[in-house]
Image (cartoon, rainbow, N blue to C red; front, side):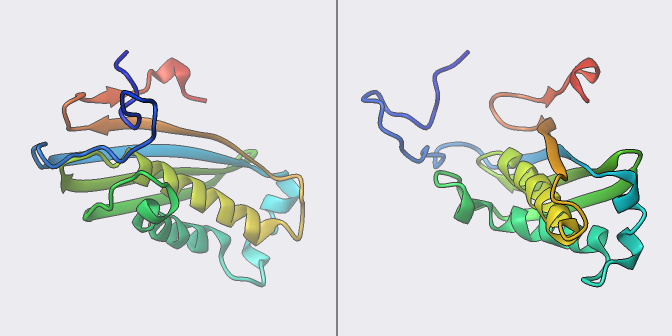
Length: 159
């Protein structure tokens, strides 16, 4: 394992200088799961705030675009694409995201932020029905491009 890149030799946090890195196409996909009781899931279409799934999808896209404002040492990236899929399934809502860019650094944090913000939005839209909703399993599914190469989570490690 390499050393942590956000710390200098004295152990102080700093923004990584990516100025000398080549701009390449980079993508990342992330996942989140929001555990919701079946009786609450059944009421999603009746939500007076609007369609929670559509609001969460838009919130995830907006979250990805704001990642550099939320995560202190992230570089602002020119995102070329953000997709957020929000699907109801047994036990809750599964969120998968995709972020793409052509830049000198990766988009993992943008994909993860999109997943987290979408999950938080599902909670916000449904909390009046149940405060025990759980946001679980936020993780990177895969990333492509960059010096460190591609990464794909082992199928056995996915929840």
